[in-house]
Amino acid sequence: MRKKKECIGKYFDKNKNTLINKLIICTTIRKFISRSLVGIREDLEIGENIELFSILLFKEDCWNKEIYNNNNFEQAIEQLKTLDIRVGEILDLYDILGGDKVLLGDKIKDKEDEKEEEKNKKEKKSSTKNSKKKRIKSVF
Image 1 (cartoon, rainbow, N blue to C red):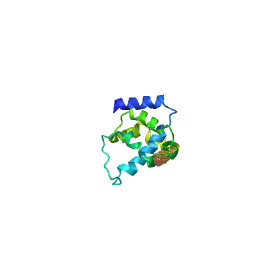
Image 2: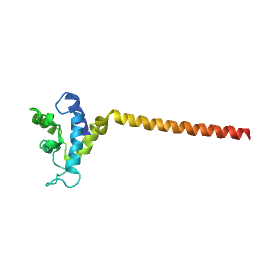
Image 3: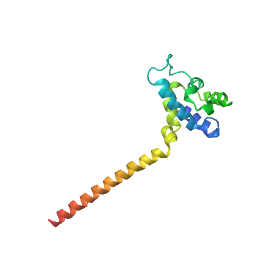
Image 4: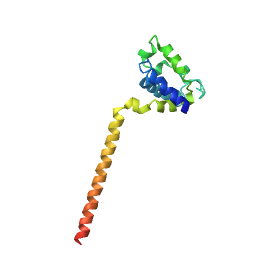
């Protein structure tokens, strides 16, 4: 997957203004996983060795309508097929593209900031308690 990771990175560096960008693929992957890979919703089992974008080409419900109906959609999918990503590698692809950070961006950062702030408050509170204990001990 390391070699594919480099290819994916190069592809998106080279094609930043393409019809299908990282954000769109991450959104599509989440929809595809929830609708097609989780549970028994499909009549046909989707094998892990099938090329991912060959399947996504026909999964209209996973795509934004504007993108799916765009005249350049099939051409964009053909370009993505050159990455040779298999269904079994879908989570790796999602992570490589930035996954939740790409989709949720500031929301994740805000949550991380909240956690850090709470941690700092706890440390400060603990530090204050220890300081009081030391002062009490020194009095006795």
